[in-house]
Amino acid sequence: MTTRGGCLCRAVRYEIRGPIRGVLVCHCVECRRWCGQAWAATAARRDDLAVTSNAALSWIASPASDTNARRGFCAECGSCLFWDAPGFDAIAVAAGSVDDPTGLEVIGHTYVGQAAGYAVVPGDVAGHTGLPT
Image (cartoon, rainbow, N blue to C red; front, top):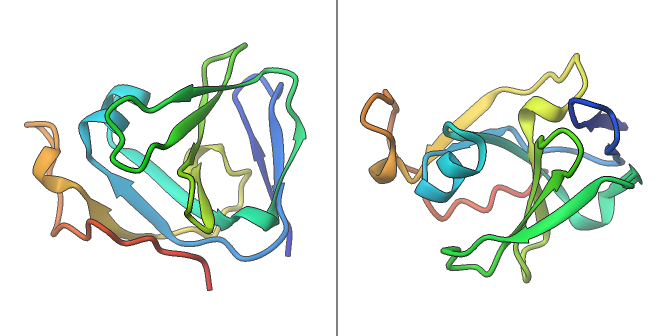
């Protein structure tokens, strides 16, 4: 199974050569500032993710991250693509960047205590690493 995806302008493309997790929607302040809304992300095992076109891939430290994460984005179009924390076996991938058909479903919401005032969300599943099975 290979899942493909990339940024809006197609300058960054990736392949996931293995299973991907269902979508977790993160409502933390950093994710909301990162993409302008709660961030919907799937995840792939680190060894299964291959960036196939990365000329415009840039990384930025996630300043308030308690996991010392960094975030990957396209420097050309600004698409938010990856969340990568050292020590995790998986890398989060923006669900919206996955090529259709995705077959993805939302499996939970995290950090709902930090959700925007206008957000309507179910219970918190914070701490869920959610590696694909």
